[in-house]
Image (cartoon, rainbow, N blue to C red):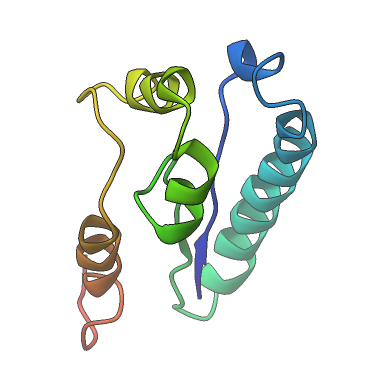
Length: 103
C-alpha cells in the first residue's frame, strides 16, 4: 500500500482558505498510515506514505499561473526553494514498488 498526499503550512491559512480542511485530511492519512503499518507488519507487509507539498503539475500551474505571490509562497515552503517535479515523486515511489526488498 502506498499513500500519497499533500500538505499546507499553517501560515498559509489566509492565503489558501481551503487549506484548513487539508489539515484534518492530512492528520487522518497519517493516522491511517500509522495504523496500517502496525496492523500489517504482523503479516510482513510494509506500509509507507509519501506526502509531497507543492508539485509542478497542470493543476498547480492553473492555480498559480498569474499570481507571482502564490508561486513564490509555494517555492518558499520548500527547503530547496522550489516546488517539486512529478519525476521526483515517481522516483520516490519506484523504490516502493520494486520486487521484494528486505530491510
